[in-house]
Amino acid sequence: MKVVSIVGNRPQFIKAAPLQRALSERADHVLVHTGQHYDDQLSAVFFEELGLEPPDHRIDTGSGSHAQQTGSMLVELEPVLAAERPHMVLVYGDTNSTLAGALVAAKIGYPVAHVESGLRSFDRAMPEEVNRVVTDVLSALRFCPSRVAVDNLAAEGITDGVHLVGDVMVDVAEQFGPLAQQRSAALERAGVEPGRYALMTVHRQSNTEPAALPALVEVLESIEEPLVFPIHPRTEAALSRRGLLERVERAALVVPPLGYLDFTALLASARVCLTDSGGVQKEAYLHSVPCLTLRDTSEWVETIELGWNQLLPMDATAVGAALADVTRPQQHPPLYGDGHAAERIADLVAAYAP
Image (tube, rainbow, N blue to C red):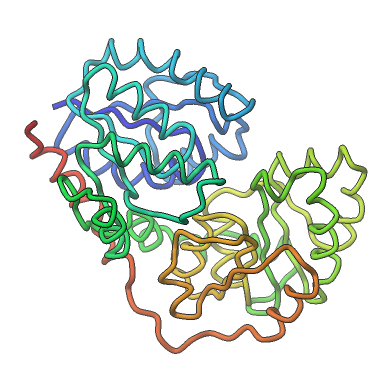
């Protein structure tokens, strides 16, 4: 059996790591890198740290609008899949790489398996929401990280091929979380002490558009405790164009994008995390760190219901009040599985018969 995995950005590299190992025992596994994240700090470092084998195919999508990125991937992925002739195409999460991989596979006639299926923010203004909804419709196997995800699919009339497997990010966190604490010197380099700083990430288009940048800077400047800010290339470029980067550098410790081990070490020891990332919300929960999500919606509604996560506007007053009230809830159940999701997915893929 041959399985092709299509990945293109940081969260997908992380998710693919345990699956590459699990699938290697059951199938011929081919990894395709779309180049959606092409900077080494957002790509190569994750292959090195997580022990991912180099991609078998690499296409250079680069940056561009959502339509340009997706269109370029469609053109480049078609001959790759046609040459490989896989029994299954595995896509991850909700990026343009996910959508393009699912569309090409479905049009050629190869079954699609969706890792992290069933997540919903119920906000169609988010490109990621469109990507995940379309991918779920096209998929033959739908691997859900939580019961909420299963229920979301059922509400849309999707019940075939739905499997509650847990989240592969739990697999990664359990394997590499302790290693991050042992090997990373990220806290020492940042000059921060465990539990006495905030960690912040911002990269979404809605928060990095020119009109949104002043509010972002005001939030950064309003945070009084030590603040570590790994800056995404998109965010850095947007701030530089508006002449706002120096203000940000005075307000926070701005560091380049971090590999998995350094970022995990900083996240696990932070007092609080502020982010607009879907994946970082979940990673914060996995490491028992309260999260303030700078968005109107979240896919990880369970973390909000339990009080570990809170939705906030990009507003200095609202963020300041939330930071003053941050606490760690007593309840922290294993919402996303037991760390064996990759094995379950690999078994289901290997056993699939159309």
